[in-house]
Length: 347
Ligand SMILES: Cc1cc2nc3c(=O)[nH]c(=O)nc-3n(C[C@H](O)[C@H](O)[C@H](O)COP(=O)(O)O)c2cc1C
Image (cartoon, rainbow, N blue to C red):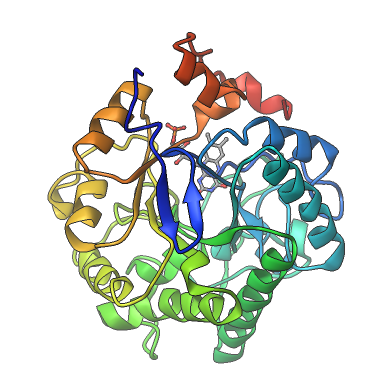
């Protein structure tokens, strides 16, 4: 077989065995219905990709106030839970596994979607046009008060319970790519002077509290986290940010998580302040199951898995271009190239 390690199984937690090491990366597609529930097309889309060892869903809102893109699904109300049940049933019937990626966009939310001013760790806004929207610019966020933090923690907990009820195998906390949790982790966006800012431990507090709420709601071994310590998108690095991630990863080692997933568009890019690639920085600090992502090919995936630099490899764009990606890799068939025009429909 051409890719023996890629096609070997892996257990991320007790009783959760993945048939292969290829993960479908979370990808926002903006095709939910007007009540932000997945549709019959979403069911077919995920079912067609169930050959992945694990699917991570498109980022999914834990509360309506967290929305920053059009038609992104939620998992905070009953209709959404019922709709997601169709997705998880279809994936399970096809022999796959699926985690729900839990999302709040924080300062990237917009009143056009939410009817309310966005909130963030601090009142530090972004400028320019909103992604995937016409004629919308970022709004100035307000700083979250203690009551906001408590409400959001409760919403994460409820979302995890909802995900379990909808039949998901687990949840992945979206703490990457400059959204709410990541905004707490970086100094540019976190200027707080209370228990959630000012020191590395304080900046990591919100992420850890969310994880603890998720772990209280469902089996902790079915809770995962996605991180981007390299601050590569939607916010900027400040000197010393790596101390927050050093601390956070040390704390993650004391918890029994399903995995840590490192987000990147180009996983090979090196960052001086991390001493190289983000994936290697995390591997040196975190002892549990690790997922790498960003520009992998079957060949580079096999090589890194074999060398144990990662335990699982996530691919995103190749899964959009090739619903049958896993079968194609297995049989040596050529892969279709990804093209942005493919985002126009949910095939
Ligand atoms: C259309 C699109 C939507 C994405 N949406 C998400 C998302 O919802 N959550 C997330 O963590 N990453 C998201 N990403 C990033 C991917 O998960 C992944 O990290 C990235 O595409 C690099 O992997 P690839 O080179 O295999 O595509 C998205 C990427 C694309 C192309």
